[in-house]
Amino acid sequence: MLLHPKDLRDTNILLGVSGCIAAYKALEVVSRLRKRGASVSVVMTDAATRLVSPLSFQTLSDSPVYTRMFEAPKQWNVEHIALAEWADLMVVAPATGNILAKAAGGIADDYLSTLLLAFAGPKVVSPAMNTHMWQNPATTRNVEVLRRDGYFVIEPDTGRLASGAEGPGRFPEPRDVVEEISSFYHSDRALAGRRVLVTAGPTREYFDPVRFLSNPSSGRMGYAIARAARERGAEVVLVSGPTDLPSPRGVETISVVSAEQMHEACLASWAETDILFMTAAVVDCRPAAYSGVKAKKDQDALLGEVVPTPDILTALGEDKGSRFLVGFAAETEAEEGLISARRKLRKKHVDMIVLNRVGGPQSAFGDDHNAVRVLARSGEEDLPREHKRILARQLVDRVVRALPGRDM
Image (cartoon, rainbow, N blue to C red; front, side, top):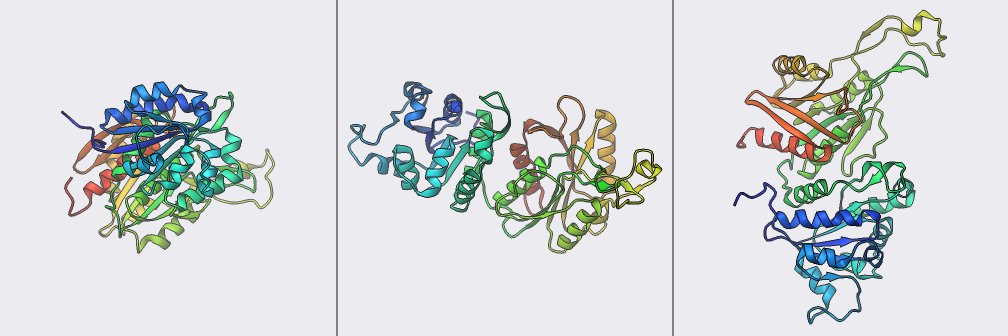
């Protein structure tokens, strides 16, 4: 039988389901975990049982479903302790703001929160809730506490919520959740002792205090790569243009605005860098002159002369040494873009180029998902459309495999 590359055979997973409307999606999470070979036991909060029948989870998991602390035990033991000792990994998906708060505070007033306190192994939570609840300072604090305590947090998606509103807080697609769980559980420390520099987001080049040249880059790919490299044990420096993304846990984040500032920040870290991911969408030109006051519409200075900004990747590539360099290219035309990316691979002294398509309905800019072509001197590979968190791990994995001394 051909196994999935992140097979979970012989893995015991305790899946907690809390009272979120996305609880029905946890049924598919159970199914996908089972298809990867895992044994799954499900624990539901009382609120979750009002949204999805425990019988559905019992059928898919082929195991009893646990709901109340003081029910007659399904086997003769201290049940929550026995479950905690049975499991290799504990996952809460979806995780409401309430269960996050309980876990962060060490509260154990129902079956699920008691298991979270009793389980000593690796823990994963996949939050899902209304945007305002997700962005509430209390939830932000609780998530940071959980991260410090060693929890792995799957960031919620941005999109249409049950209320009809649009924003962050959406439960990711079950296939993405399972991929995150598998990647986390199988993660090694292959980059321990390495220092990784990642650039992310757009840059801005100002005409005057209120107008600037820029692009729609969200920074999500770069932030995801920074997290993925950190998961593999690297010391990570993230140089980020303007975004609304939170700094990844355990990553040194340096905020910049212009291409020149990004260049200077990269140079400051360059001597100690082993691997570079140049994901930032750096603006190619800037106004030749800056006005300290808002320019009027009819002033020539508003659309006046522009000059090139630093080509950061080229400059760093000229001082490459033994470093591993990954460049990113954003192109609108498939064939011309591929030709351009191949040219960059040769001219910019890089080891790998990641080609993105921008423009159109599946543009890399501003989307949670993307598909790329990876170009290396050893060949080319298409990575199909995936969530950027998953794509980031795939890219980091390919760099790990290509490092000197490792098999390709």
